[in-house]
Length: 361
Ligand code: 13P
Ligand code: SF4
Image (cartoon, rainbow, N blue to C red; front, top):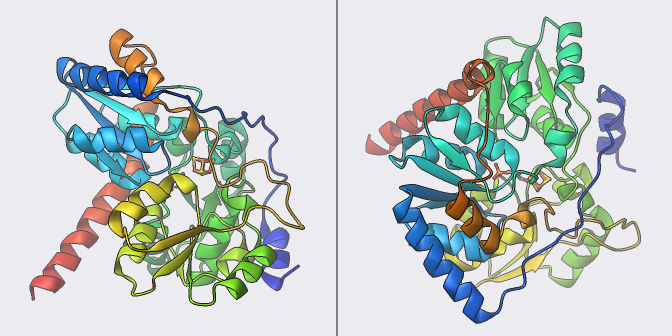
């Protein structure tokens, strides 16, 4: 065990919660059914004044449909931003439930649909609102910062929401204000942010079941086979994997790295749904999946989020036909949960203006 791992275990707050992980099920479609469904979905999106917003981890069928229909494919922060700014009356979120909830919180007047409302996230499931609220009550001196991958009820208890693409900046901002942080739910991301910033952070104990499976020892072996490859890692991964990264970043940041770095080969430690966009961004580059198996494997994820995989063409067509699977967030809860989300959107918009200003100068 590395020093980083020992430190992490010493400083997390509590036992990790237990929950059920679904078996990964993907639609098997023949070419005719796929083509028919795509035509029908395109027609229904227009008829319903709806826009499709998809996460990078969803099936390429959904990502390409979003692109072809004026929708959007992105990370969790940008999905929320896009759904908020788009004029469509219905936002269809292909992703996991917290993404649908965030869209609904930001757009209470819009109809938000999801192909499958059972598409959860282990980080969200690992942070039950009542327990989390009790934990916050024990630490009233700390600013509560929660990752986007949480329920509306957990966000309602938070001061700030962050995403993997914004967490470092927000925490540095809070340090500059002299604040101590209570962080939830991802202990690996929290530990990474703490190591990078030196912030005083108390960590909730939960993890992403997909990224947690990446293996440090086997990654080192793979790097030895491909010494010319750059290693790209999402910060939900364990410290032994992060320690070997050339780039640690959000999903959008990892795609940018493939496009902009001069290397020809990349070992990628995140859900392999992202390969669709990476290949689009850099068709001539070689992408290699980081290992989730090996001597120390308990592989139940194999770099594929079983909840993201619940999104498929058949379910998408069905919700557009019937209006089923509407995301509901009560107005009272939404009014509380929007506070940390808006804080992040305003903060990141402000930073973008600063960056643009600097470029203009
Ligand atoms: P991003 O915000 O980087 O898209 O991450 C969301 C997520 O669920 C990663 O597992
Ligand atoms: Fe949650 Fe991990 Fe799936 Fe992302 S990949 S939605 S963090 S379980």
